[in-house]
Length: 592
Image (tube, rainbow, N blue to C red):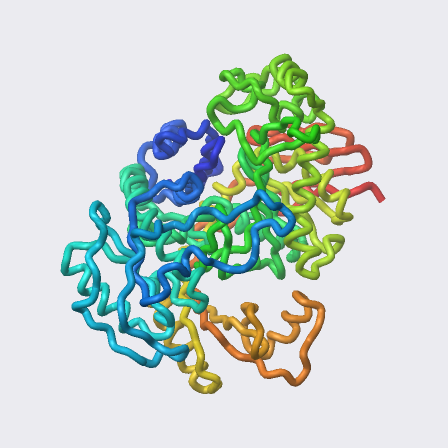
């Protein structure tokens, strides 16, 4: 038996390869316990394969948890990790500040030696000058200038530290890409999260014969690989849902779509073009830039558990604070007293009377009414505010990138997504809403169907096309070796016009002008294009595809209607209708 398990902030979802579904409350104090509970509900013994998406790394980062780590860097550059970039998190918010640097000043150590911008040595490293770590610190992140082009100096320093018994993480191993601030932060956080994630994944490894873990790039890796590189797990769960959404949208005739995953704690959206989720070489999580391959998932703090309140200025605010799994929304009857989006949905009739949630039971409408009244908010207002926030999230991955939302479908999943999707699509003029089968556990479905995958990256500064082609071939070979000889390998380039500060990932240099026009609205005819990084992705398809799961029966529906399914509720407003589609999807469109 193969199972996919997504451990979210409110619920832990499981889907088995025979179509069975389990949904249990998450256990934030010990996430592995909820995973074990979900598996036990099937009553089928130990799975042969557990494909897992986890929030453990993300939660640890947001909570500033992790092991103490020293930073070892070049002389004069210890403060790069604190100076960061000139960009402010919120330009007009005088009270907003950056997160604290991930390494305190007294734990930042400097060594001699220097490389130039092409990775050539200017001053050699003297191993005798490598300083001792501060008392109580047993791990170090070695981050030197231009190590993405030449790792020799980092390797020399790491050898000295490891001989002293220090656990060492080098930037050329974690994030071999340009931009020292992002590379330094990614390496430090990877080192800091490693012990925390390793303990969790070791506990998880006992729950199945084989455990594979989803990375932020949308592929599964062995549990040992995941434990060794926790920075790859910071968007683990959402990536599974995006993969499933892309497959269903393409089957329904919409290769261009936006995945819309609204769960209990957050909403995750991602643009899909030509059936392929958009990639992102850098993601910002908790204010920190993570420079590792990832899907371009845009996340906001808006979910079923998002708490509604009146702020000091008298405005209605929803989220990002969440009631989570414990105590949860007031209607759960588990001690929660503050109103949430789920309470508003229940009061507004988006959840039918007597509705029960797995592991929770029948929802208490009276408790929801009381919570809303005590906070001085009304259900319709709460829903209007949260819908507006999610509309802006969809705009961020479409309009802000030159994509007309009227030309893409919205794929709605997660426990709350199908309740709000038509309102979002109406506001943006999107032509259709696709509700996949088992939408309430959509990310777990994506995990079950995900391929094994490894992506490798290499900074590049040689303008010679022949040298670039040769290096790309070598990188592809390296990627294939990490997955297996039967893997399919694709390559890509990070390109920019000479002198630009940001690049775009494209299949070939010839594809860059069109991508630049789509993203920025113009082309610089005749301007030279430079390659700054090479990418290779090796993929071994999963043994289970979307069409292999049993197709649940769905009936046509005409709005206004509320369709209660085992794992989610679908709200079909007046003027909308739904028809069954491929793979068991329900395709919602406006009446002609």
